[in-house]
Length: 201
Image 1 (cartoon, one colour):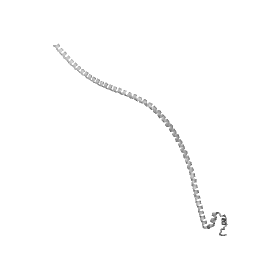
Image 2 (cartoon, helix red, strand yellow):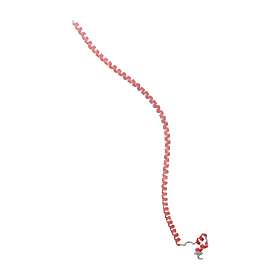
Image 3 (cartoon, rainbow, N blue to C red):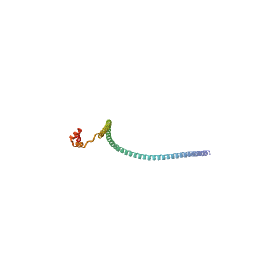
Image 4 (tube, helix red, strand yellow):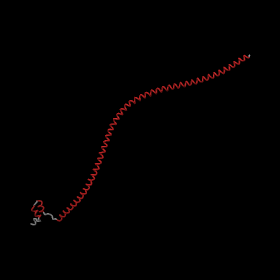
C-alpha cells in the first residue's frame, strides 16, 4: 500500500511537473510565436522598405539616365555654343577693331576740329580787334564828314548870302550885255569891261 501511495505521489508529481512544463512550454511557444510574428512583421516591413528602395533606385536610375542624357545634350549645346561664341567673339573682335579705328579717327578729327576752332577763335579775336580799330576810324571819319558837311553847309549858306547880296546890290545886265555875252562879241564885252556901253557913245 505504501508503494501504491508512493507511485500515486510520483504520478501526481509527474503530472504536476508535466503541467508546469507544459504551461512553460506553452508560454515559451507563445513567446516564440509572438517573436516569430514580430519578426514576420519586421520582415514584411523590410520587404516593403526594400521594395520601396528598389522603386526609388529604379526612379533614381531613370533620373540618372535622364540627367545623363540632359548632360550630354547640354554638352553638345555647349560645344555648339562654344563654336558659335568663338565665331561671335571673332566677329565682335573684328567689329571692335573697326570701331576702335573709327574712334581713333573721330578723336583725331575732334582734335583737328578743336585746333581749327582755336585758330578760328584767335582769328575772330584778331578780326574783332581789327573791326574795333576800323570802327574807331569810321567813327572818326564820320565825325570829320559831319564837320566837313557843316563847314560845307556854312560855305553854301555864305555863298547863298553872297549871291543874295550881289542880287540886291549889283545892277542887272542890259539886253545888249546879255546878247554880247551869248554871241561872244569881244568888242562889246571889252567896252563893257572898260565901263562903256553903246548908250555912252
